[in-house]
Image 1 (tube, one colour):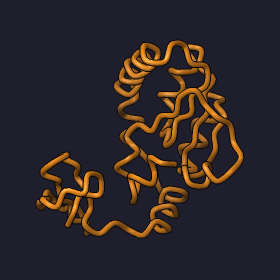
Image 2 (cartoon, rainbow, N blue to C red):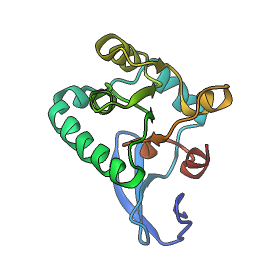
Image 3 (spheres, rainbow, N blue to C red):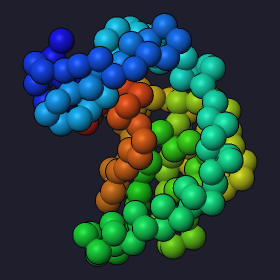
Length: 162
């Protein structure tokens, strides 16, 4: 089985969780599923059932990490104005971005999490996945982030190209 990221053929068993078997690439160290659920099953799960309880428990850690990321982005890009976060979770990252003067937008497939962002932070939020968002006629942004998202997609290369 080859790595979905770098296509290395040398991969090895890593662990199992529930009915899923994980492998690890010897080259890029990516951990991936042997049998990824079909894209439609993943979309349905994230749109209807996904919740991220650890996100609420780790709010302080996420906010602290967000400040570091935003500081580094400012060093790389000067002072960008607009930022879009794909897979925004509870919106802590964008809340920090908004506090620093960015104009934030969230794209969050989980209905529960999208509602949290809109209710608590009044950030424009699109309750959909990246593929649905990218197929529409939406805005362009100075920065687009996808933090802790790549491990949730079935085709990382296609996701990045979108």
